[in-house]
Image (cartoon, rainbow, N blue to C red; front, side):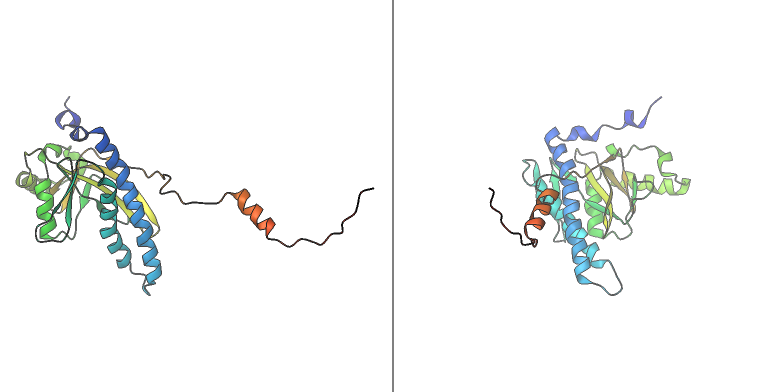
Length: 239
């Protein structure tokens, strides 16, 4: 029996171990750094209708920048300008990396992401980076109707490329209250969807640079005791 893993090459072999470790570590750090600032900006703005445009814009611009800042030390890191846009395209080892927020909730089928508002510039960029080598996912995974499947197949054939580069997507859900689930995997643009093959979950681990500094309970109690008032006492000499 032939499985999808038999037909699809392992995308992880496209990166060195150091590059892959860095990507897995940098994406959660960048996402959470932007989350902290964007949530704070939303709170400070105090929108009377509690609209989330401040938070949304903060995550859309901040998370990719914080992510890129974590990657810049790598020798395989590079940036290039996106045509007709002020945005930068992130590459690692020649592969395009696109950080993506799916919204407030991760879809139940986290291997197929809907892109409701996709500009022509962004569509061209993602389509050019798509690689059909990583699109061999079982059809039943998407629960597609036959007509929709035909349309997606045509889109895959139109956007599929045989070049070595891939489109690697770290993606996540988040709200002003916190970050939800995070995944990492290669993607292919199919119409208004990103189809992810063999995604792996990502976790956020606090380091010395990201962990909040907290005084120990003993230190706080000692300072509270030292600053308190003392009852006056008399001194007695021992005889």
